[in-house]
Length: 296
Length: 307
Image (cartoon, helix red, strand yellow):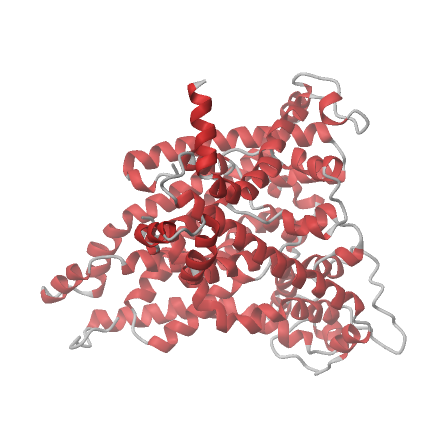
């Protein structure tokens, strides 16, 4: 940061030129693929077949998008699943995680450290994929349900502990103690005093949880074969790599049915919300990272 | 009897609190601890009828095949090798970007670049694979277009393993460096400003400030990050490998990691013996390495240890 009275010295200039170059390079390299994706999704299929994907699309065309919105049922269904799973999952996760964090924070709970270690141990050792798979499919019979999409990502030890630390730092013992003296039950204290006070942490952690749910394609891949129970990212995955019959592509009326551009347009549609929300939520994510990084 | 009385009275006294934490305990019990019991599958000849606990034991047979076939060595080597490269590249570039951003002038330039750099963190690996397709596809990809227009031959990265030793780390950095630079920036912000003031008075150049103040102060952060990364060296980025490479047989030997092997054996070839043996192998390996990593961190900086 340029401090007051700093002279335009040689080292300052060379450093800034170098910095702008390096930082600019990374900025460009991260932005460009998305721009190219968008631009090429707006190209005509003909141009892509003739010239391939390019920086400047030769022919503008909305054919790919038109195809998607002609038969939007699958997309809408996938969106609905994703939105449902994300909202219900995030709300549930936040509520019970912060509740657990509150309990783990209370000094008068004798076994809080044991419980904390109990959940923490799961990050050190796991049973692996195979038993997990059979547990869910054979024993819990959760195959082809919406519940499984929510359950696989429901709780993260990391977030619970971050919330616990946040509670330790922002909620004074005395506040809780005086509420107890006034006769409030622990649950009431949690609901009316703690929850409102940890809103910033809930916002940041909530965003991370939401992102996890939104981008989850693995749960559907493992457990949900029924198409109407598949979330957006998994649907995109299948459509992009022609895994299921691309039933949407009816070649009728198209000389060059948009296959390649269709894939790109589909990707844009699947990622759209993330991009639209990004400018608004970016700073909360940054706050969240710092929350997690700074230990007590 | 005395101990029992202790537990019960404790539960009674804080009953509401314990009930409040039951959902979370239950969740981890069911979804994390029960599968741990399922590790016995690795020592059994699993069949659907008798399920996990009634299938016949077959000792170390599953493991024997896993090791003798050379698969164990192959996937372990790949997992460790790629993770090592990832750790190095990720920390290096995150650090470099953070230092530049911290010291450079030009607020708008910085902020926009940072916003862009953070973007890849938000997309799924499905979308990342789509972007890669856009760039590297043999017929239509932009990279090949540029090569063709320069008069060179197209390259088919999807049939040539050697490109991936470079591509995978590059994409890993592309995806995570934005995130990592925020971490290092937070650490840099935590450095005592007085040192910098004093240095300025002494007429230090920017480079001197970086090499003599910033970097030394970041050593603990860097060390922790590297150690934490090393602690997870036995666990691969499944999402990344599966999305970018899929079931490409040509790239299998050079890019198959433990996680993708387990997944394929479970869901594809239905080789439960291999899948469970490899999975158990990975869990134990992970555990041991994590313990070592944590022990090392503890020796350096007590508070940063995992526990």
